[in-house]
Length: 126
Image 1 (cartoon, rainbow, N blue to C red):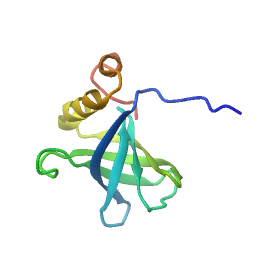
Image 2 (image 1 turned 90 degrees about the horizontal axis):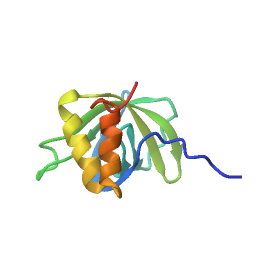
Image 3 (image 1 turned 60 degrees about the horizontal axis):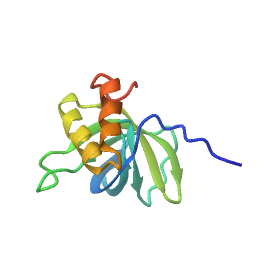
């Protein structure tokens, strides 16, 4: 049986840290495996439920915490490999930083730019 790729956006492999805050819990460090314009996939020992709301801070900048990409999000699926998280609300002032992160780490930077442009600068439809 083959699995159809339902992704709307290209994913870029990255090696950055994020803080994942599940509803009612303290933030936990997670390793971001890849990022797209609609969400991230992280390695973590956490096992949240699919559909659970969360907050994500992708740590950027020389001192990591100086320029986080902040987003409200939702857990899409959980596996032994990690957690798939979909952005539901991204702070607009951080959209350029997310675009830069994706384009810089993309296997096809031009395609990543096209995907961003096709959405008119807004990266997802909640």
